[in-house]
Length: 326
Ligand code: NDP
Image (cartoon, rainbow, N blue to C red):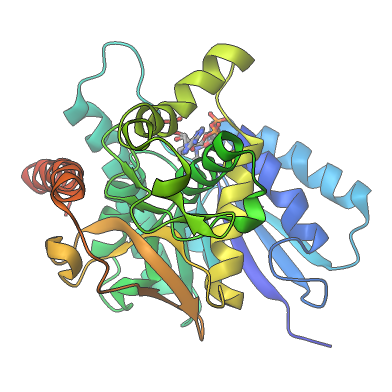
């Protein structure tokens, strides 16, 4: 039988962690023939929640689950990790300045990045969910200089999946017929969901929908979907965030085939995004690597939206540099 894959989940006592681990253990992420080991990492205040979740994992008797270990020490939690899902982060609370938020997260993602660099398996793949996800991923990456920078990614798959779902609903088509949507830039309100190269129900998306909607209300709806969920549900998105993190890892490891998706990955200067930033791009995955889809035409409208979101990433990077976090 196959060697188990070790998956470390941080913030395992929180909501998204809870919604993630049972699906991983059931085989939804790496397949029905791949045994897994889970490492649940928390801060001391979060340990009881993680312990409770671990009891429930036992009670599920998942055949693929070879073990569960808990820790509040990154050096232990990332030991031998093949996949690191960094979900826990310090949320913005009322009255908190941006610098405070970045500093609080620097204190989390710097040491985690270092522990990953020193302790994780050579093939470790990192996905950051906790916000501000792109910049938290950059901080972690900068603390693991011995790993290829490409191993550090941030989640924009939830934005992507929202964009797919909302386009399909607008046209009255199946999501299976949607491809070629791109989320560009930062996982924030400045993100740009781009339908320029998308298809839906076997026709160009921009022919199937009103162009003003595509470049106005649609962009707002995708970018503000998190707030819409909070308003309607009375709490932030949890299952859909967990689902997106699982989709991201599954596609990264098992490949996308010809289909495109979106992920925040390290820029090598593609589409004019400054090198080293972790920005969302159109991607495919094969052989266990994300590859940015190059050569897509970027019109003036798209250029402006991409540049605005990337400018925000530059400002976040500069702020964490000034704070000495990278
Ligand atoms: P959640 O599990 O609901 O969310 C975790 C993180 O995911 C938040 O930072 C949240 O950011 C982010 N996130 C990213 N995308 C989304 C999205 N689309 N919808 C909702 N959230 C999104 O938070 P909980 O408070 O329930 O749990 C967090 C846990 O993390 C706690 O148990 C805490 O103890 C732990 N923690 C662990 C650390 C560690 O392991 N070292 C460090 C810090 C915290 P946003 O707030 O912006 O929505």
